[in-house]
Each structure stands twice: as C-alpha cells, then as structure tokens.
Amino acid sequence: MTGDHYFTAEPATPARPREVEFTVAGRDYALASASGVFSADRLDPGTAVLLRKADLPGADVAGPLLDIGCGFGPITCVLATVAPAATVWAVDVNERARALTTANAARIGAADRVRAVAPDDLPAGVTFAQIWSNPPIHIGKAELHELLLRWLPRLTPDGVAWLVVARHLGGDSLHRWLVEQGWQVERHASQKGYRVLRVTR
Ligand SMILES: C[S@@+](CC[C@H](N)C(=O)[O-])C[C@H]1O[C@@H](n2cnc3c(N)ncnc32)[C@H](O)[C@@H]1O
Image (cartoon, rainbow, N blue to C red; front, side, top):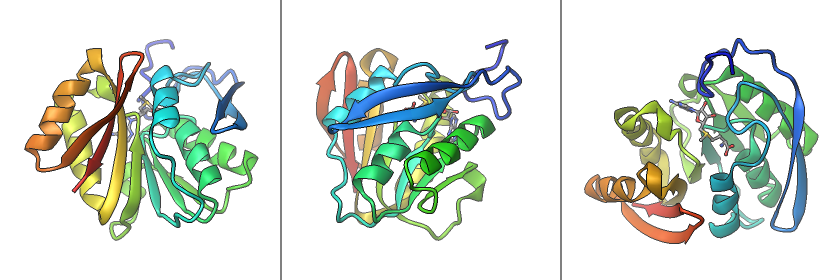
C-alpha cells in the first residue's frame, strides 16, 4: 500500500482494479475493488459476520440507511439490495472508496438510491432508520468515539445501529463505552472473535 492507510483521503497507490465476490442471504455479489481501500481482496471477515448475524432490513424498510466507513461498498450494496425502497447513504473519508461504492451501486442497479459522500457532505437534516458499520478502529479510540458520537445521534427515535468490532480490537470496551454514553447496547452475536453490537436509544 506504499505507505497509504486504508483511511487515506486520496490514495496515491495505483488502483489495480479487481473484483470481490461473496454471498449474503442467498444472493451473490461481485463488486469492484482496488488497492488503497480496506480489505480490497476479499469481504472482510468482520463484515461477513455482521452481514450474517445482524438482522438485515426487510424489504419494507424505506430508510434512509447509513453505512459509516463504506470502503468499496459491501455493506451498502447488501443494504440497497435487501431494502429496495431505501436510500442508502455511504460515508467514507477515502475518495477511492466512495468512487468504488458509487460504481458498485450502479453494478447492482441501485445507482439512484446510493449516495456515497464525504462525511461533511451528508446533509445535516437527514436522520436514519438504521446505521450499519464495520467502524475504522485503527483511527484511534478518541477518533472512533468522536465518529460514533457524530453519527449515532442521527438515528430516528426507534432506529437501530449494527456495529461489528473484533474482541481483540476492543469490542467489549466499545460496548461498555456506548452504555456509558446512554445507549442501549446488546451483544447480538459473537463469532470468530467478532462482536456484533445492536445499539438503540
Ligand atoms: C473497517 S473499514 C470498513 C469498510 C467497509 N465497510 C467494509 O466492510 O469492507 C472502515 C472504513 O472507514 C473509513 N473511515 C476512516 N475514518 C473515517 C471517518 N472519520 N469517517 C468515515 N469513514 C471513515 C475507512 O476509510 C474505511 O473504509
């Protein structure tokens, strides 16, 4: 990655396009990926646990939905597929990740319902029925807390957030911290060292 982190705003490393294939809820996906984004060569195992264990939105969920830190867009594309009436906002600081998510939304026929934007470009008034994230743990604890404090308050009153965090990267301490901040947090599932947290008001 020539010194780039996956959360670099504008990766300098050559893109070297590739495809990532995976199956969620019986549906096959083949998404565009590239160097310089998180888990560029395969569906991240934590993301796989999240998409397998959390309650995916039903077809009746109209959204809007939010994917925090969309990467090349696997969570966004699954949400847009299982909730075909919903608009999905996908935020990422990494420009290449946003471009890939936009391209992948077109691949799955959801270009008109997926908005991949930089965090500051998401309009202030939009609130979310569901927030999904495999959050960027490596940005540091203070930054991660700031990120969650920025987006979780934008859940609708009966909204739900689904987060996946590796236990060895602080999944349980993040759980405790969220409770201290006044959120209801349930450890919905635990698999392969990953915690799937269900967060509500
Ligand atoms: C663990 S990766 C998950 C990527 C993708 N959702 C997946 O499951 O493959 C976290 C993502 O968060 C992004 N990120 C880092 N800091 C961020 C921030 N402050 N706001 C939004 N996204 C951020 C990174 O660029 C990265 O794409």
